[in-house]
Amino acid sequence: RKRLTVPKIRDHKKDGETREPLVMLTAYTARQAQLLDTHCDLLLVGDSLGQVIYGLDSTIPVSLEMMANHAAAVVRGSYHAVVVVDLPFGSYEGSKEQAFESAAWLLKQSGAAAVKLEGGEAMAETVEFLNARGIPVMGHVGLTPQAVNVLGGYAARGRSDAEAEKIVSDAVALDKAGAFAIVIEGVVEPIAIAATEAVACPTIGIGASAQCDGQVLVTEDMLGMFERVPRFVKRYEDIASVIDRTVEQYASEVRARSFPTEDQTYQPK
Ligand code: KIV
Ligand code: NA
Image (cartoon, rainbow, N blue to C red; front, side, top):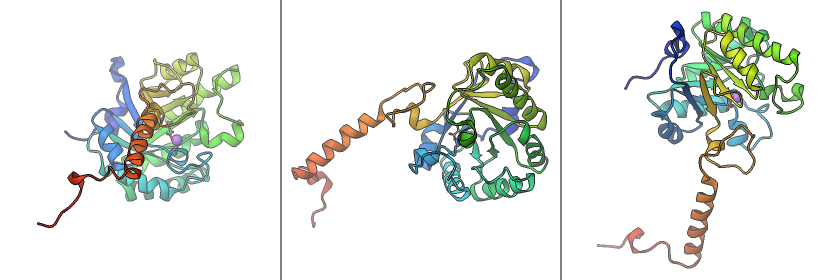
């Protein structure tokens, strides 16, 4: 099967046709990408890897190098889904030129197809600049975790009229600037729906609405790798307890010298 393309994603709701929602999950490693790839339209190498892989408190300290290494692994592990890489905090906000340099380097290092950046109206010029120079951009509005120090936390957005209007106008600005899709994160449902109806490109919800044009989750969250996850995460599995049970058994077999057995041991001929 051939890899999906950015224009295919961008045209998701062209001609007012209703299509099946887009499926996106995060991926940070080659093997993980391999397992998710056939089920997903898009794989996101999210800067959430800061918390998920590196144990950081927020996405603020994540570097371009970290993103490039994991993105390259995800591209190597996939052949079907469009691979999108997050531009990390501090690598794109300074100017559209800075954004181009960072994004171009990321795509050259990894082979990914597109970048994602946080922010609406303030980033519209940058989105247009990158798109015109060969770099497709996915937007991200509402709860934007890189702005945690401005927002003061990770609470849902769009509860006041001013906030709600800003989320919709941010989405419209990104759409007009040529974003091929927009993540809407942690936004009260009516505003997520209003933003989805206001833009031509598909919206991808996380803690937003089933009416978005697609959905995304952090894979480790939906697999149950963590004790604490946001309310908007549905835990489809409890992998943490599978690992716990399995490793407990391994440890007790090692301590009892019942592993390895003959099956796992080499003998001379
Ligand atoms: O970094 C990330 O995983 C994301 C998704 C949650 C949208 O940006
Ligand atoms: Na992110």
